[in-house]
Every structure is written in structure tokens, then in C-alpha cells.
Image (cartoon, rainbow, N blue to C red; front, side, top):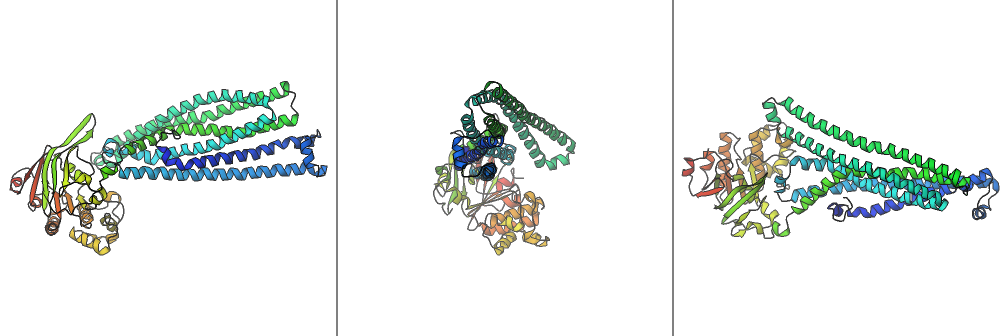
Length: 580
């Protein structure tokens, strides 16, 4: 779990070991201050009932007149309790600070791993599960961190109280110890039940998150086919299952404290009976002080128990975060995989040499490319055509190095792509397509997304090249118009033109257009193609399209079918074939 030596959470939370030690130390100091105050109750009660006090204490306070001794002890006791409260406030502040820092560290580490992990990771894991862990499970995992720190403080306090009780009356302490062990057995059984039921909550919450994500992503289809009631019923079913699982966990967790409180009260009654009937060697002030110590130890015992309950409730979330971190660590590319060679100028060609690629799939694997070989000449336009599922998108993903080939190799001017520095290579490539979504923010921010230091003049120039400047000017806020979530405030053609401008502003050595003009009208497409005719003079274009007008402007055509490629030097064969 969270403190296991092999846990992937340990590197994230390594800095909090000193915090746990500090919390435990402060907890013990607070308890010793409180215990000393309780111990002083013995001479205070003795003076009040006139039974005398110990010679040692009497020698220390004999400088005070008898009438000032009781007020002095009361003042000292009050000062000790005040100091204890101040230490307790500091301990709570330290725990809260550690909790907030721990949550921040955990979330940032997870997102950083997600941003740099191999792209295949996202094919092997459900998006809803990842969202659920990031948005929900991390919070409950941080609750586990808080329970560990709170438990450390409570454990230190209980230990200090134990020392003080042994000092006052070791016989009664043995009774307390036996009773506490019996209560601990009952507690363990109840905590195990809570931990088991928290797993049900995690699974139900994951199913609900998956259902929510499906509804949001399929909203257009749901409404188009009038299935709102059906989806609402499905969501209600998953939500009801989560509510039931949550209720069972709540019942397990909240019934534990009352049960333990009854057991602790019963233990206190037994101690009182033993002290008054069997152990007559102790004085009344001493027994009173012991009972006060035992009573004051109860909140710390309950705090320790509550920490165990909280950790048990959050244990499934801790496991989920640990598994995600472990999976991300396994999928992090090595330095060799990221490449170290500076990208070439792309002056000759991009070559695919018997490249195969296989996607992971349920029940096995799916081969997308089968020993594909072809070349994309530099400083020209190459069309990539073929039916749906032929492998066109896989070619694009391999060029972006989202994936590496299962076999074969890709070279850039003769240099293996796998050896080229990944970040530097992607800086040489830009992608525009029908499925490349816009980000939340303004139109200007979207165009400059891949070139954050772009000037406004450069943004306008790129928008003009993508035939977007005219419609942007007509918008109420112009380039500051918010595109909305995923750009849905704009039409499909407008989104495509902004996406193309976002690619053009980078002035990439390789520009990939994946159906980048499928949603624009014929006039806009013509204007965009005229620009691309000029653009390809000193750069390389790879164009995926079903439009005859677009394919006809390309210098070369590569036809994909069933994961295999056939290269052609003219477009005439495509005009008569399957290109529309």
C-alpha cells in the first residue's frame, strides 16, 4: 500500500517522511504537556481534600504560602493545556499543508506521465477509467495520506499516554492493554469489511464515469435517434448501483465508531470496578488521575481507529493510483526510444522500408500495416489514398512517432526515424485534419497553439493562407472569439480552416493534411490548394483526401489497401479507381 517499499507512490511522497516524523513528534509533545497537566491533578486534588502531597513536590512549592499553592497549580495546569492546544493547532496545520502538497504532487506526476507515455498506452486503457482516477481516485488517495499522518500523530499520543499510565499504575494499565487488544480484534474485522466494500464503490464509480463519458461523446447520436430516455435509464441504473455501494460503505464505516465507543466505555467501567474493589493500594487522587488519562487517551485512540477506517475506505483508490502509476512507468519511453540525433533538413525523401504495425485489440491483435514500402519525395506533394481502414491514419501516426513500427523501419533522408530526437522531429511536422480538435480558448490562441511566440501578424498570415481570415473578421470578437469546448461553437468548415492555419503557422518541413478540407466549400478548397501549390516548392506535403481536385494537384500517389501499398508516379490511375 502507500508505505510499501515497492509502491510507485513512494517516490512521489518521499518528501513527506520527514513530515510524518514531525507530526508524530508534535503529537507526542502535545500529549506529554496534557499528561503533565493531568498528573498535576493528583497533588491538586490532594491539597483540596487535605490529604497531603508527595515530599518532592512539597519541597518545590514550599516557597509559596499555603494559600497560593492551589491557585499556582491551577495556573500551571491551565498553561500546560494552553501550550498543548497551540501544539495541536500547529500539528493540524502541518497535516493540512502536507495533504495539499501531496495532492498537488500526485496529480502533477500523473499528468506529466500521461503527457509523455507511449501513445499505445491510451489504446490499452479506457479513457473513462483514466478520467475517473485523475478526478476522483487521486482525492481519495490523498485522504489516505492524511489518514497516515493523522494516525502517526494519534499513535504518538497514545504511546505517551501509555507511558504516563504505566507510571501511575501499572496493574490497571495491564487491564487496559488486554482490553485494548480484544477491541483491536473486533476493529480489524470491521475494517476488513469496510475495505472490501470500498472496492465495490470503486468499480461502481468507474462504471458510472464510463457511462457519463459515453453519453457526452455520443450526445449528437442520442438526440438524433431520440434515445434520451434510454440513456437516462442506463445512467440511473449505474448511479443507483453506486449509491447502494456507497451506502454500504457508509454503514460499515460509521457503525464502527459507535461499536468501538461502547467497547471502550465498557473497558472504563471494568477499570473503575477493579480500582475500587480489587486494587485498594492506589489513592483516590491517583485513581482519578489514571481515569482522567485514560479518558483523555480515548479521542486519540478513536483518532487512530478513524485513521485506519479512512485508510481502509481509501485503500482501493490507493491501489488504483498505484496501478496507474506502475502502468505509466512501464510505458515511459527510454532515452534511446526518444532518439538523440538532430533531424535532417528533409532534402531527399521519407522512406518506409517493409513497415508493419499491429494494434492491440480485445482478444488479440489487429494488423494495420503489412510490410509496407514506399517513398515520399521531399519538396513536393504526395497523396495517400485508399478505402477506410486501409492504414492511412496509421501511416500518419507512425510519421508523428505516436507509435513505432512493429517491424521494418522509417528513414528521413536515410536516417532512421527512431534515432532522431523525438521533440525536435515533431517540431518539424504539422498536422491538420478533420479529426484534430480545437482547444478551449480564442481563435488566436488556437492558431498559435503550436507556435506560442507567434505575433499577431503571423497569426493573421496563417489564417489568410487557410482562407479563414475573412470569416474570422466577421465574428463579433474577431480573433478573440472563444471557440467553445472542442471548438463546437464553430461550424465544421470553420474548425478545419483554423486547424489548417494552426499547422501552417509552424512552417513545418513536413505538412500532413488528413482530410483537412473535407468540410469546406469548393471555393475555399480552391483557395487553399492554390496556397499549397506555392507552399510545396520548398516543403514536403502528405495529403490524405478523397477529393479528385485535391489528388489531381499532387505529384505522387500512394494507394493503400488492406494494409499494403502501391506507389504511382501519376494520378491518372487513381482518377479511374477508388478515390471518391
